Length: 305
Image (cartoon, rainbow, N blue to C red; front, top):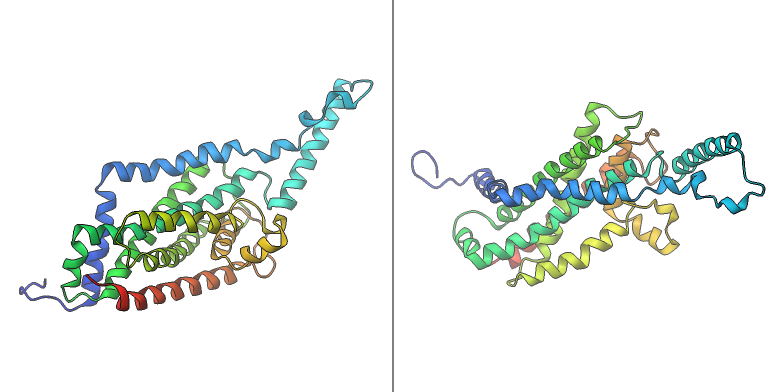
C-alpha cells in the first residue's frame, strides 16, 4: 500500500515485500536459522577433516617388511622428508593445493548453495497448501514477481551460508592462494548469487504445478547428488571417466567451484580452457539468466490457483 492508501503498482514494491517475507520465514525461525549455521560446520568438521588424502602419501604407509635389514633412524628421517616433498608435489599436481581440505572446503561453498536452492522449490508447494499463493495471485502482483522473490531470497541465503563455510574453513586451517585478496570474497559472493539464482529457478520451475510435498523432495533427491558429484566439487575432472568428464564440463557447478577456488586458494590465476575466472563467471551468468527467464515464462503459463 502507498502512503495515501492506494495499492502500489510498482513491481519493485511487490518484489521487495515478497522477498522480505521469504527471508523473514528463514531468519525469524530460530531453529531453522540455527541449523543453517550448524550444518556447514558439521560438514566441514566431519567430512572435511576425515578425508585426509594427503596422509596417504607418507612414509608411515610403507610396510616395514619392505626393508631388510630395517632402516636406521637417520634413513627413516631422510625417507620421511622425501615423502613429505613427494606428497606436496603430488597434491599440488592433482588438486592445485598442498592439502585436500582447502580443495574440498571450496567445493562445500557450492554444495550448501545447491541444497539451499533445492529447498526453494518446497516453498512453492507450502504456499499453495497454506493458501498464501492463492491470496498473492488475487493481488495485482505479477506471477513473475512471485517467482523472482523466491529466487532472490534463495540466492541471498546462499551468500549467507557461503560466508559461514568460508569462515569455518579459515578456522579449520584453510590455506589461501597467492591470488587471494579481500576483493576475492566479493567475487565468491557474486558467483554464489548467480548460481543460486539459476538453481533455485530450476527447482521452482519444476515444482510450479506440484501440490504434494513429496514431489519437491523426490525432485531434490533426483537432481542434487548428480549435479554435485558430476562436477569438480570433490574430485578434479581429469581424474573422472571420459564420459563423466563430458558431463562435468557442461555442469554449471563445475564452473562455479572453479571460480571460487581460483579466487580463494589457487595460485595460478587464469587456468586452462574452458576453465578461467572470466569464462566461469560468463558461463554461470548465462545459466542463471536462462533458467530465471524459463522460470518466469513457465510461471505465466502454469502458476495458478
